[in-house]
Image 1 (cartoon, helix red, strand yellow):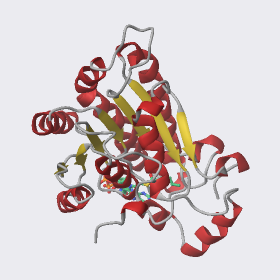
Image 2 (tube, helix red, strand yellow; image 1 turned 90 degrees about the horizontal axis):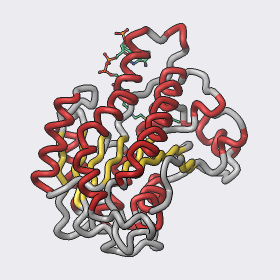
Image 3 (cartoon, helix red, strand yellow; image 1 turned 90 degrees about the vertical axis):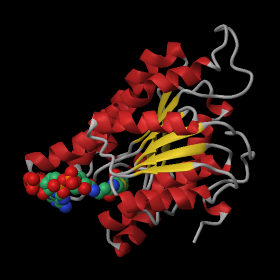
Image 4 (cartoon, helix red, strand yellow; image 1 turned 60 degrees about the vertical axis):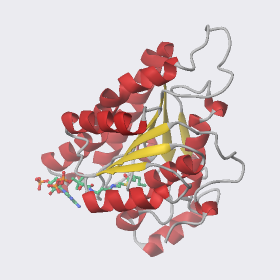
Length: 286
Ligand code: HXC
């Protein structure tokens, strides 16, 4: 059943702010990324979501398309972000069928709980490959389109653009590596790599009008990741320790996404927006 609008988009945003824009998202069939895309689509964008599982990705694309009458959402399954040629083809198809790529969400991630003694070299490599190399491959495949999009909004350098944005990247990271997290060394290493990648792209591509930022979600309720990585009773106990005293929602990650991609985020580049109810300031993640 399609989600009620209030479950994925705040009423502080204005419909139509992303009209004629296209968002390309890896990991787009997952709980967090699908919410980010759904909110963008509701606010006017068309979208292309990328996943490994064909059935899941196509089904999610159809579901997201119900967010707005007339929305176009491509669901490209069987695309492994570890394969640059597969991403190149997906980006080309997105631009051809939807007209451009204005925004990129690099959200594909691998995760499981494993202590270092149970983590094989291949397991470590798999997560780094999916998260870090996959994010790099995503940027490489989409950068020419992002540069083209950014050029439409570039000004003389003295004034900010009057209206409209394009050429923006958001990486989906985590807070696991800020203080260290047991059973998550592979993911922590990978997310630290993503954070570094984002900052470097920000300073290097900023002069071309491209921005690169990172969203670091904390404990987000009702997600596949959270369900798979923790037990219900532990989640309830941990949630009470968060300064906000609850887990976050996918809508709250979508809100940060809209901010960064909207005119309101014009001058934000190379930043990480932590959306975790203040949890990481408490130390490690339980
Ligand atoms: C130890 C494991 C393992 C586990 C897999 N491996 N699961 N090792 N414990 N639970 C090992 C395998 O044994 C293998 O090593 C290696 O990892 C690769 O596994 P494969 O299944 O062969 O490879 P692949 O198909 O590439 O899958 C990689 C994967 C991926 C990382 C396991 O399928 C995956 O993570 N899927 C889940 C995606 C997901 O949930 N994403 C949302 C993330 S949420 P050997 O040595 O045996 O060959 C998130 C939130 C973070 O990231 C924040 C949380 C608070």
